[in-house]
Image (cartoon, rainbow, N blue to C red; front, side):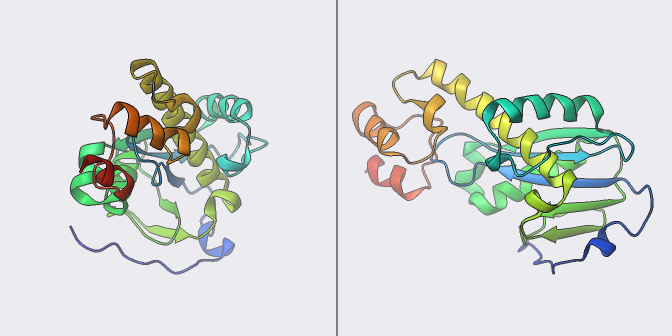
Length: 206
């Protein structure tokens, strides 16, 4: 897989120079956890249907994220959520898997975007005009919306994992390397949903 392009920071004028353009925001969640897929979302907001309260999903309460996620799905022109699996993370590395999840989300949209805005400084391989924005999840509404959909989707998946593996505490730590999670791996073992290429898990596999 080719090395991702590093994009330069762009101005607000650059992003919205075309009136009525279908601007797609893209973000991902789940790079840091030791378990579960990495999840990405893509959102094209409707220019005439403002959604108050959009922000970086990490800055919102779980209840507010859930409320906004429902509103985004109802009001957006188009949205999609996709993921890259644990197996793909271990095979490709977490960065490439994250970019793959982003690409899958954008390519799953029901509308073709005029421009794609990606949170961060690296770009998935897409056949569209695409720009990266550092801190975009806090400054661009479409990326904020994508971050909310990605976060709520991944959290729901980890709650399902908690039901399958109740001894591991996935509903609480969402797969991140908390002391509780590491102790559970030591006590009960490594699961198929764990990322074996990540150092804390790899050490416990030996």
